[in-house]
Length: 437
Ligand code: 5AD
Ligand code: SF4
Image (tube, rainbow, N blue to C red; front, side):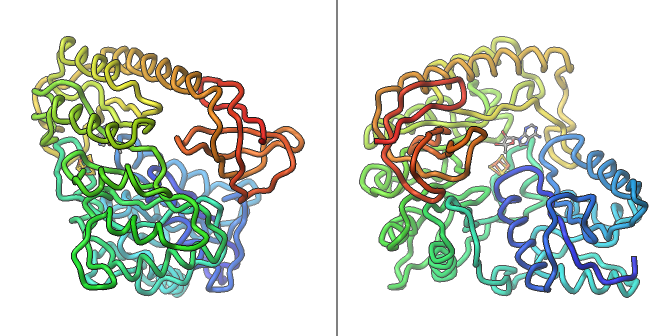
């Protein structure tokens, strides 16, 4: 590839932080005068923004690259691999997959120069974790969806024994308060009504507010609460150990903070939690939820689960099912344990065989789906605000989110970006029907 790429396509995999990074990469390329395409097959430059959290991610990148190299029209795009696979594989991926650019999650602000280097036939690889932050040099946000992401914290120091994040995203780092507030204002000016604060351990965020006082995530949320034009605040993902008294209190008295909490538990058995190095117990987790419910009785709860962690017995897995029963999650994510190279759990004895893992995942997902449907049914009859985010399939239909992060569809005279009052009139397993008030 020698001619200058004029069009680009960003394909993001994995978590919401990657979605955010992907948006910022797109803004960077647009800042270079390039134009976005909807399809990877039409772009001169394809950025694969990859995820490394579970198996097959790396293989998927190689097969994606292979497909892009065999386009029907015979054209060859420039290919950049970004994200956590780039961080983990480094030069190996450039060598094996013959991609043009390899850039890690902490270095993607250098994409424009890396693209130029690749064009000039030079090695275009950057997986450094520099001290100066990419955020300082990324362009201002100008056009965003009604519900926008804002990364406030990156990295993780928790070292759960199954997880690659501490290795691919590095140590916990909080962005400065003022930079976050500036970006939040820019997002609101660009049309955002809701901001979801993102971090691998978002509730570990700390900083100094405008008056030089040390604050935690609750302080940041309270400052955002005062931002004119912003209607809703959310945050994700949290670690139970970083749920401070202040943050719990914020759920009770910050009006714009939505009644929703994503708090991964991973497993319901104390021996397994200990082997995972989770540093919370089943009981301490449940007590934490009780405290959140005490200040915000209608809070919708969400979690992450891993089945088949090495050594997990049938009885220990039953503890995961029973914690699900006692919490009653409004929604959740559940995964089969996937051994990640370099993590302690990958070399633990007693890895669980595939069919046991499949069967446990199925039982867990059946329970979670049952509870999600029950939560939705219990919402019928409620009147609530819905932020309309996009149009639906039917004529005049709009899709939005309830305060409890349920998808709600309405038909009527309203526009994307509106916060409308709705009566929830019917519930399905994963969405609700609303009637405009
Ligand atoms: N295998 C399966 N699931 C994992 N997660 C993290 N690492 C692994 C792994 N090795 C899950 C956890 C985490 C979510 C983002 O991904 O549940 O909370
Ligand atoms: Fe991974 Fe655990 Fe850190 Fe979450 S808290 S990113 S699961 S190491």
